[in-house]
Image (cartoon, rainbow, N blue to C red; front, side, top):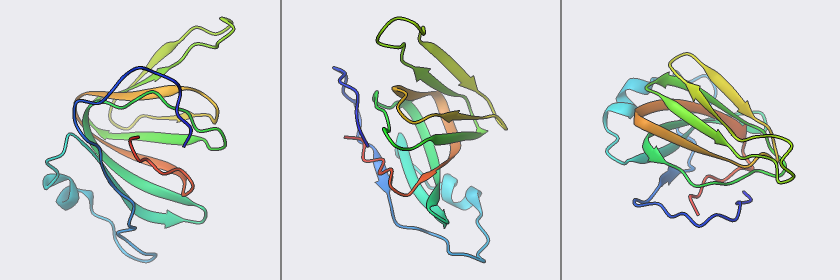
Length: 138
């Protein structure tokens, strides 16, 4: 994961779990997983689908600015409210914008786009991205 050059730091650690919890042909139930999360920014890999992974995010607060040079990233809101800040183009041709997602809404951030995510309230989201993306929080 490539990161944009920003002078921001997180007031809390990211809890990132890269182990795959469920294999093929296993039922995935989110409620038992979500109910035990106490971290402010929790990320758990649920399953692998071909060269991609499905990740569960339970979060409240801000993630740092970053970009993925080679991979698109998909966000889908299960509950809560989720904001995606998109950085303006360096040449000034494209203004920055904020995409607000509510339950049952999704959005793709294309590769190379500098972005950060925010959850103003506790939110549950699913992310689909290539397994090459490692959400380390660094």
